[in-house]
Image (cartoon, rainbow over all chains, first blue to last red; front, side, top):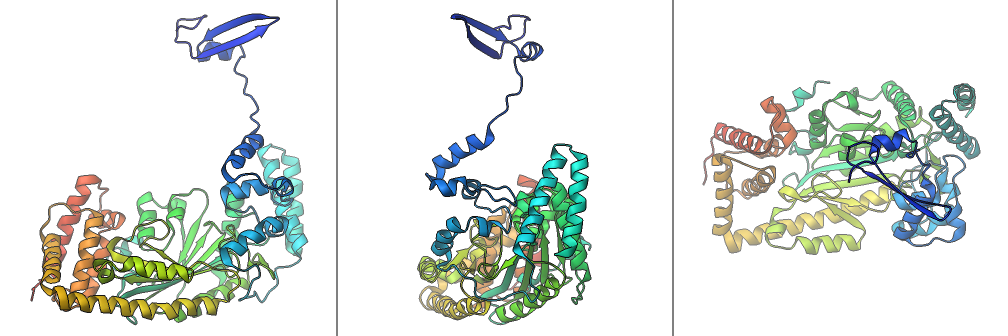
Length: 162
Length: 355
């Protein structure tokens, strides 16, 4: 099939219904773009992801399914799908979900063995640093450079004290 | 570090020395560690990975470990050189193929390797020839202590060392012993050994770790559980089971000699003959034939070729090693032909006599 506005092969086929009237368009990529018909749709990735995960691992209790780590932003669902956690703080955030997994895999839930001589510091302060770093990453991605600079200074200041 | 210098030596894990080295190839311990105030590697963007790498690289450079470690920037290496490090077991396969800032600090003897931005921010590894888990633990514990003075590790009293994958949490320790078990394979008893090991929660993997097949009859026995058991306990569980496997392998070898000596000798001589005379050789076939030759030497059925030579050939005939030795990228038939020529030349140099 040829494009309705030029001779190239039509690859875009649009069907609309306007006031009860069906309208069919056959266009090539370029003509469709020129008419603004191919505006990039915002894909709802989280929703797609949740559906996919649901299909793979079955339904999780609502409470767990909704959990998101405040520090790194990873969802419990994402962790279950990928098998990798997002930051050290997740062990606290996802504790309820992790404990049965740990029990199943290790037949234990509590560490025994080597302990670092230097304590890493207050877990809340460390989680906050991960959070600031996640925010910094977002700010850079969204080209909010003033915010990024502010966050960078804040991280520098807080990292020195932990 | 000039990687080309390493091509002609066999690497610590195949040096073929150390206790029980006719069966136990090497002992290896790995510790997973992460920085407390950063997202894990998989959640970090390129900028954050660069920050993590910069920080760890600087701290690693400051520890007073002898002999001095040298840092290798992995994106700066060719694919071939990264593959070369995988074949020497100095980096993981994932590290060779992933992207972003990452690297490895290596000791000159290749016993210590510290991987930066692996699945965890830091993966410490110590390797020793033969059956030497305790020595490996002493080394890695020391490096870990030195690093911990300078690095804020992610750790909780409850869960131990916090890792990206919960299967590593706790001690973060994976300790493994690599065994050469050709007689258990030949007598078809290897599956029985696997099942027994799985029952006591030990994992069995092939030569290059997870998912790799056991080419050359090499098997790695390692712990699965990392939480709820102290490092010394995990090590002793492996240490205790290895002598049993060694005994089974020795019994299987004795049975083969006693009951099928001629057939065994034939198999070994044919393996040797093929290695000397073939025109094309795949990596897999080379591993299988070298395995038979190695068994032959250890049983006294083949002499004038030494274990260190066979061990060297195991590694030098791997794809990346071979290409580096030949000094040219080689594919498919060309590579198999080059491998056959190399084997023929090396084996004739050593002047085999078959008794």
